[in-house]
Amino acid sequence: MNEYDSELVAGLLEKENYSRTEASDEAHLILLNTCSVREHAEDKVHARLGNLKIHKDRNPDVKIGILGCMAQNLKEDLLKSKPYVDIILGPDSYRRLPELLSPATVLDDNIVDTKLSRMEVYDDLFPARREGINAWISIMRGCDKFCTFCIVPFTRGRERSRSIDSIVEEVHQISAAGFKEVTLLGQNVNSFQHEGRRFHELLAEVSAVAGIERIRYTSPHPQDFDDDLLRIHAENPKVCNHIHFPLQAGSDPVLERMNRTYTRQHFLNLAKKMRDTIPGLSISTDMIVGFPGETEADFQLTLDVMKQVKFDAAFTFKYSSRPGTKASEFEDTIPEAVKQDRLQRMIVLQKEHTLLRNQGHIGEVLEVLVEKNSKKSENQHQGRTRSNKIVIFDKAGEQPGDLVTVEIVDAQGITLFGRIED
Ligand code: SF4
Image: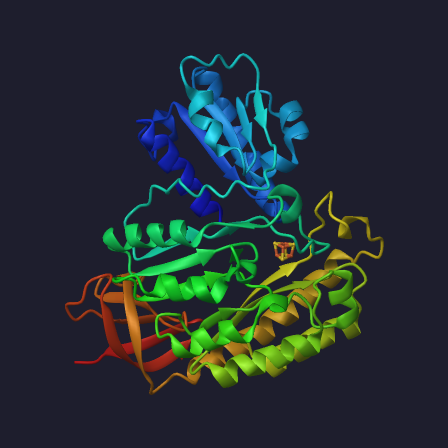
């Protein structure tokens, strides 16, 4: 989402005749687009701002701005501790940038605008993208779910969806620019709703755009997964057979304290239905260990869900308290060593499942979208299956963006190895 927002801001500034530089030494304006979802992300921004202060001391005319969730969430702290920052704009205030940067505007003081909007979806603004294979498109903003561990509803505001017309127009643009794949983005992507039209209807419209071969989306919420969405996965070949399906925890008491609004059984039933309905489906997930009050028995229930679903991939996190959230007030916190131990056990189990799932592809012939050179050899390409698995194979004259047929011959860790078919 932040990558998309950065492209959106770049698009806004390019319209004003700004040009982009990769070298911060050359820049007259440096914007950091920030994330508050975990403490680590914020720490990195503080460190980066420390470096930029040295730059600004040497070049006092350089303007420094902070955008996004940290701007929204930590403005007071930033104003106090980083007075050399010129502009602080929350996620709904990017339209103000051209006005604030205009020579007519005198930035005597720090400019702060973190007002959240119930309407802003940047429907008429299109991002400045670099060339590539996959383009991100934001289809909605904000979130109404209020999971107790999550800062997003406070930093990004209430849920609102873009119009289908504007999204489809953007998909036509990326197709004309040569992109083959689109990933639709939202904090809670499957609760998309615009003028009574729902997410599966949007997928159908996007899939009608010529030139787009694959459609992905992230992240859905288990509560909002309906049969219409499963059906379009099964019936529409452009909608990829990969679902990111965030579990977070596998114990009902923990899910309840997280305010996730589903039970472990609901999650398990849906995962089974997905695998039964969608051929060759891969499922990835997010999981948090060490949420306040999580007992060893609760943790074992999470491992049990993992054993039943055998996720293809997982993003695993130690719980990190976010000031301002409800969970940050929970007192029964888990010691760091216990969190670390649980995370380690979870990672070991997930590695087993990833390998098992990937080994299941050996001998299959899969369609692969060529993305780039493999990191290890210029003589090999890296591509991706519809089910979102990375495949490495020897080059045979194909180019990035081509769809090729590859026989899978090996699986190691998260990677498949294949042989291109004639
Ligand atoms: S659904 Fe996702 S974005 Fe919304 S509150 Fe929960 S974790 Fe945060």
